[in-house]
Length: 62
Image 1 (cartoon, rainbow, N blue to C red):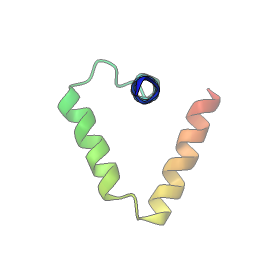
Image 2 (cartoon, helix red, strand yellow):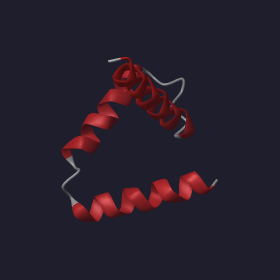
Image 3 (spheres, rainbow, N blue to C red):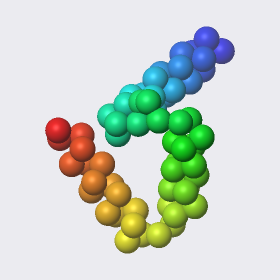
Image 4 (cartoon, helix red, strand yellow):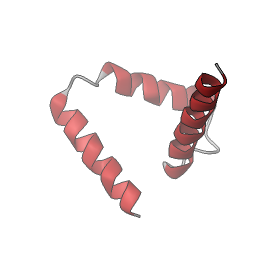
C-alpha cells in the first residue's frame, strides 16, 4: 500500500515537472487542464501524435 502511494506521488511530481518544462507553471490550472483534455481527445490522431512526440523529444534535449 505504501509502495502504491509512493509510486503515485512520484508520477504526480514527474507530471508537474512536465508542466514546468512546458513553461506553464504560472498559467491558470483550468487552462492547463483544458490543454490536456484537448490532447486526450486528439490522442488517436496519429499524425498529430507523431508531431507532438517529436516536439516533446526536442524539448527534452534543451
